Length: 587
Image (cartoon, rainbow, N blue to C red):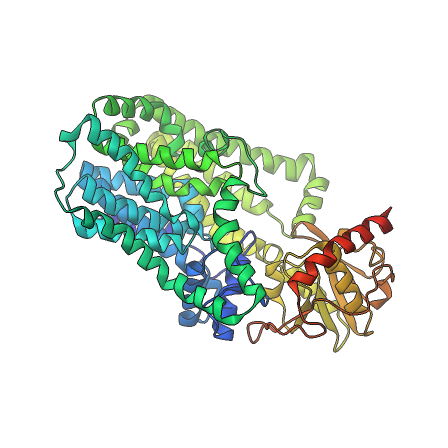
């Protein structure tokens, strides 16, 4: 049956591959790091524009870099790890559902996973979450093969290797370990529902040891490199990666603050469509199985609940964090799907969803072409592309499927709408949006506006800008204090007449005149200007530059500081002074 799913999987997950560049958020950063690894030959410690990148371990970026080595095309390489992870999760879900519920349930589980919005969205994205979800699913699969369908010690050990690989992809790779909580409950209340596993305790402890050994394949060389370097910057990288970006980010996050109920109320209802529409029928069916002590349902849903609670307890939340729980919920739903599709309520809900999609599309078309053509044109100009023909195509598709739903069945119409919508997006909408979303349009305007032999500097830059530049550029650090960065940028700009600085308008004052220079338009959350030396006000003058980076896209960047060696410790001391100065001048 998996062979029947593969063509549909490729149609959904690989459509449009190679037709767009990396888009924010996150995609340009990972693609830039991977490209620079290949060009510079330095793979151990990731860098963004020559600066250490400590947010995530490097496994995902290694895989993107390997894809770039193989294909020579970054447009393809940055999506390959997520595509492979999506196909891998599909195979694991199909096989696990087959072993638990039978072949028909396996087909239904695979199809439902493919049609679920969050799964397809992430499997088509150059972000880290699909890959870590695959490692989590492989760990979950291995533990279930042993704890539920076993004993099978080989799969137990595979699970722990997957946990180790998950950890060096993203810190939450340990999530399969939470399976031991519902397993302990079932073992206490219904021990006869689980296989008897007789083995020395050392066999059980060999699993965590394998995970540690797997993590050490990256961790040991990194720690040795940091220790041997004598670099304060690398020590800061190590501490930030191992402490602040893991436990610190979970316990005291600095962004994406959401309430406890965020996932249940604001994410699952849309991200897990169409699965979420079936929850009114699935929840009672699950409850009956849980009361009866069905071990598979307990382990699958108990583990998914543990994942949901774990992420809900952290103040910092992003919708994509709960993707690892989705495959387990799909497998738990698999034995009921065939019956659900025959229920009148489910068919009515599917038909209403298709009809509502057509009506929403019709409303947007009427707004854009009849009632508010002027506002629609202004919206298109601000977005950098015309989306209305794409909306018309989607509306026609939804209307045709709604009209034909009686003949083919409402669930089939809903499934075809999902598949067709992804094709419209992949082959038409995404290439249409690419120039504005990728930064290519902005950087093309900047290149055209530069004087002949002009030098380009970037302040408050986005990673997609470094991906799109066609020449060596200068920047002033990654995620630095804005006042300190603007001061260095102004000092650099003032030294030569042919220099130009691309900077957000809101960061120009007081070091630069926000009315000077050429407007470059609004992109990536900022209004940009290309300023020359005449924009420098002198309010933030400094005797020497504290930090300047020279980045060459042809060689993968450089740690050379050019006019002024970087000194992070000195930066921190000067940051407060620069901030106070900026506030005083602004007042």
